[in-house]
Length: 515
Image (tube, rainbow, N blue to C red; front, side):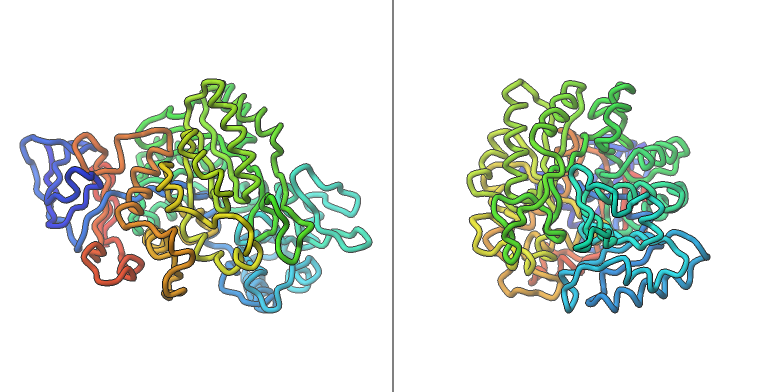
């Protein structure tokens, strides 16, 4: 029997009828009529559709909840002190992972090395990812564990930093760190059967009802086990890592397969690195490092080979591209796919720095821009320092929308925090949480509140494979919604967006979390 949910302020996301005062739910979907078995008055000040995080690393995030967190540190010495305390509290010989260090925020700004880490490691092998996830800081024990020595060549799409006489410094960029990343996805990094349910509870408490996960096959297996056990309370679109392509094709997987709880998403490819690691692929060098134009993690020829093979198997593609040259290269490959008649969804993850001439190509080619607004507010000073004066658009959310592109919002957690309210606030204001800069960074790229929520709901679902039955609170849609303690539509200041908190989260017509 249907349940009637009531609230005086329900924002539907439907431009034809943006506001209603009730939702009739039968099973997992919103219906237009039926005999009411129960009436529930929702708490809080505002109800909106459930938020879908279009780009999140839930396996990495789940494992990170017990790892060392270096985000608050503002010097190498402060980072080392935090690592030492963490190591002292862990069993002898246990691997230590985590990190999220950002040397761009340290004073002085210095790249870390293994000798500094060795001094505080004790007998722990340690591998710490940078905040952007594109550099790995390892101690000598960790390097030894994966066989990296002075004789190890740089892998394709990666670099091992070395001293002038060729000794590895412990800093591994892009593909050079993949071996240590792989260890983190084993039981050495924690049991996902225990950790993912904890993360699920946390995400529901933030109003997140669906995720597009970017991590590996171990995460897929854990979610399928949760679904089979009846403990999965968020909806999951599971991307395929490029390393699993052969297995996925052999299994006959296709994008969109599955059900409303776990479905197959696109294959994920890296075309370049990241701004913070000075490894995003740029048409011009970075200020102060003019000879460095970043790293082609996957060159254009291999990108074409992978994407054409993937789409021929019925699997959509999403490609990480941060630098302007990386975005140009990916759009060039996508244009070839479209000319060959490929109609599957094609996405670019991040699309942070774009040549103005590439913007209209997103809409023309039907390429989805999967962006993370909090990256802009975290990286604004760094972007100005490294790219200021270049003919490049910086995190151009509004420009992409105005050009007719489909834009989806995510957080890239744990690179950023998985808080969707912080995402909405950053998109609407282009400001840090403290309200700086006063008018926002590149304020011409601010979006409206309606646009921001739509990108975090319907935009994310469409980016997940053209799925149209979720993201709005209208007839036939999945009954996923969140009640908030703040009505930021009626607030005098956009700061109300960042202060809003979920008080009840409903997925499939069932309360999955309540304050």
